[in-house]
Amino acid sequence: MTEGTHAAKGTYWLEHAWLGTHVEPGVVVEVDGGRITAVREETPAPPPGAEILRGLTLPGLANVHSHAFHRALRGTVQVGSGTFWTWREVMYTTADRLTPESYHALARAVYAEMALAGISAVGEFHYLHHAPGGTPYADPNAMGEALIEAAADAGIRITLLDTCYLSSGFGQPPTTPQLRFSDGTADAWAARCSVLKEQDHARIGAAIHSVRAVPADQLATVARWADERRAPLHVHLSEQTAENDACREAHGRTPAQLLADHGALGPRTTGVHNTHLTDEDIALIGGSGTGTCMCPTTERDLADGIGPATALQWAGSPLSLGSDSHAVIDLLEEARAMELNERLRTRTRGHWTAAALLRAASADGHAALGWPDAGTIEAGARADLTTIALDSVRTAGPVPRLGAETAVFAASAADVRHTVVGGRHVVRDGVHTLVPDVPQALARAIDALRA
Image: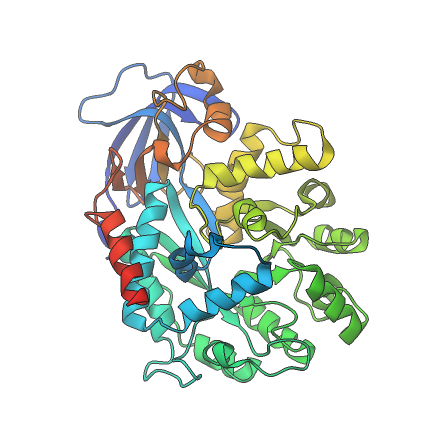
């Protein structure tokens, strides 16, 4: 079930539309072949036969960083105290139970939850490649293909960021839970993921799990694979101070410097988290045009810290947003949290406009995933629309022209009424059109992992 097969031709009337810089009332959007063919403003009444989207319509949102199976941890990891590293042990237990079939069922439900939250594209940072113990499946890409199929079934696009993960630490072999993540070498990783095929709704990118998980002499292999294909390359970067310390001890370099040494930074690269950086790191990342994906709800949930997002952006690093561990799936909350975190850190307000935060959640996020023609409401763009109610208990009151501010600083995923992906209505009036009961699908998939 792909976007190309079901792309619609039709007309939408948007009661209010965010057009990148401002909110415009009464906008007509014409769609053909899954793309916007025309945008007409100053249309106070719907034309005959148009689909009516009441509320504030934004471009489809992009969730740049996802680990779909982490959704099974929601709630269960909130008992007691601990750190990122103790949380990781619980995560490994869940990862060990997944099969291609159960992963498809879980990811289909998770991606449907994303669609209900207005997300039209996801970047899946995928390292759960093999069976427990590291034995490849008969189809060595069975797990990745399950994710690609799950996204199609849920009606959203996916960039599968196939992840190289070879070691447990600098000079250390994988631990037993990590054996199913590893291909043994970066060359073997490249051979396996080269077999993956792109589809209308799916692109294939690459990821370096982290500098501790890919030996330094193999970083260039991953970077070269992505460069040859002009594909996105993502990497967990300086999420934890322990990783920075270990990298300095092993290589005399910070993780950002090590990646730069091996050609892994650049405009198609996105560093995820970028939390604990030096001034020199920030200059390297920004000067190379490397992007930054902030995941504020996960970074606070795991007690990671607050990354230097403003400094990175000033240095030249485009910002995007992800839900990562899926403590919540709500890109509006991620956008709001990035600004509010910075307010807490600096004790001043107003670091980004609402429009800038929405661009991080839409156009800049899509670009980070290799979909530069998505994330805007303009002719030629992919016909992805997310409509937020302006009459809920959270959004009622502000005048419509303040819709961007209302969306970022008041609304939540619960206020999404419609999601259109490639001209197809995936969520209508708050109900998913392809997955009949998303809460039940989530519960069933997660319960199966606990059985």
